[in-house]
Amino acid sequence: MVLINPNTSTATTAMMTSLARRALGPARPVRGVTVRRGPAMLTDPAALRAAAPEVLAAGLRAAAGGDCAGLLVAAFGDPGLDLLRAAAPVPVVGIGEAALLEAAAHGTPFGIATTTPLLADAITERVTALGLAGRYTGLRLTTGSPERLSADPALLLDRLERAVRACAERDGARAVVIGGGPLGEAAERLRPHTPVRLVAPIPAACRAITGMPPRP
Image (cartoon, rainbow, N blue to C red):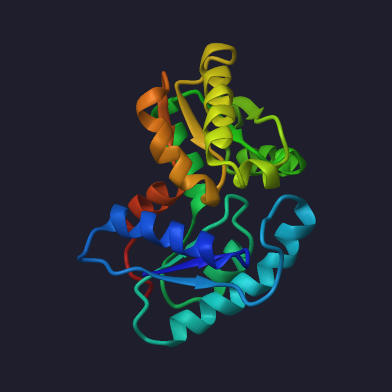
C-alpha cells in the first residue's frame, strides 16, 4: 500500500504512514510518499487545486513500481482523487471521502471538526457531492491559525476537543470526523476524551481500501 501525502512536509508523511501501518497491520506493508512540489500545508482551495496534479504524478509513479496494492490520498480535501482513480491500475481511496462515508453510515448524524476555515465551503460541497447533506449537522472550526495549532500539540488538542464537543452538544452529531490527515495523531489522543464516536480519516481509509476488490 502507498500513502501519498499531498503536502510537502516529510514529517507529516512519516506520521500519517505510521498511523496507516498501525491500522493495516504487518500483513499489509505501507510506504509513504511525499509530493515533490507544493505547500507544506493545504489550508485553502488554491492549495488543494495545486496539489491535484502532484498527487496524480506521485500515484502513477508508485503504481508503476509494481509493488503497490492500493493508493491512499492522505489529505482531507482528496486532491487529485478522481484523476488518480481514473488512471491508476490499483484501488484508490481518499481519506476525506472514506471518513465522511463511514461517519454517515446507517443514517448517523455527523459533524466535522477541523482547523482550516478557508476550506469550510469546499468541505460542505464535498459532503453534498457525496449525497450526505441530510445527515450532516455542520462544521465546527478551531480558533487560531492552522499553522499556530500545528506547532503547539497541546493547544491543538484543546481546541479540537472543544470543536468536537460543540458538534455533539450544540449540533446533535453522534459521530464527528476529524477533518485532516495531519490531525490523525491528535484524533487518536482525543478518542478516549470525547462524548461521541470520532472518525479519523486515515484509519477510515485503511478500512475502506481493504474492503475493495483489485482493479481488473
